[in-house]
Amino acid sequence: MLPVVPGVIVEGEGEGAAEPYDIEASLGFLAHRLAETLEARLMSRLAPEGLTLPGYRILAVLLTSDECRSVDLAERAGIEPPTVSRLVTSMRAKGLVGRRRSGRDARTVRIWLTKKGRVLAERLTGAARLAERQYLAALSPAEAGKFLDALVKVRQAALAAMPGTRPGIRRIKSEATRPGGLLRG
Image 1 (cartoon, helix red, strand yellow):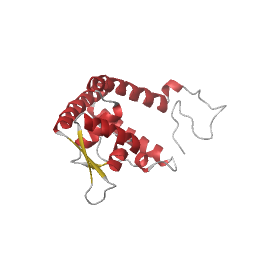
Image 2 (tube, helix red, strand yellow):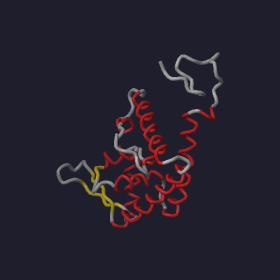
Image 3 (cartoon, helix red, strand yellow):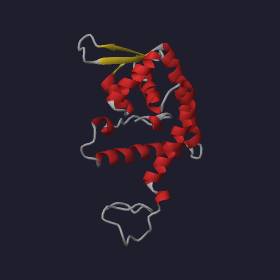
């Protein structure tokens, strides 16, 4: 039996449900609006750098890796492989990333941050963390941690309920949530 949550329709419910459905209080609406405001704030920092949100996600993933196979980068950043390829080409032209074919397998492409890319990624990640801290300031540190943990659990449950989903979308890291976590995959 699922818990009763105001504004949430349980499968099988519908017309005649006890409570009216308030779209503005629904999980999907609230999650979308929160993501929208976080993205808009981050985009205001990315645009002057000539970056898009997917481009930033590539930098953020590479910031935690010495180098990464392009297929893994696509999965971790939540971006389709052809888009990663185009973005990496553009970012390489700007001197932000390096790219080379693997010596063992010519089909495998490895990507890493250049010094210039690392400096930019660190600066932008600092801005993303600041935005998250400001958004979470309405909560106590304990509440913020529980909120982020709950979001991870809800996402895991949602992905588990989606049969046939791309592995990159379904894979969830069960690492501790920290500032910057809302922008990950």
